[in-house]
Image (cartoon, rainbow, N blue to C red; front, side, top):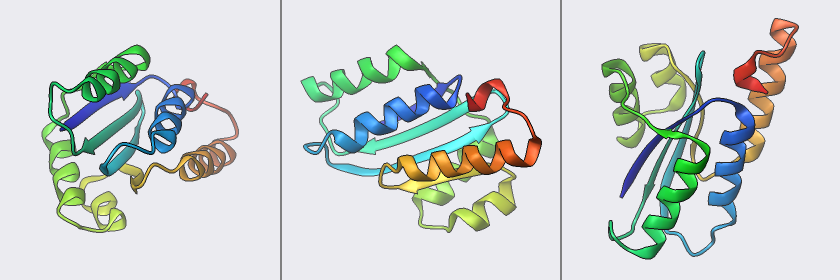
Length: 129
């Protein structure tokens, strides 16, 4: 089961990633977190039957904090390359996207990205709040 959602700010994205990290009974293939100017894109791939109660719960959590997302062609290609095993560094260079995390749900990588981005700008944009 594949989920792709957009979140307005880092706080919402962090809540979702924390939920996924703490859901030990989920068989997560990977979680990809990408930062865009307009917010955060999270792609989640899990091994679940699409109409199981657990799948419905995940969809409800994702829908509570964000909205289903239809990516651009460039972002679709970047996500496909990550799934195919390409390194996040190469994907960032080729497709000009900010891959914050790919693999296991990791709050630390998101927090570190926020800190470095804000310190480089000198202020905190709404998407990083």
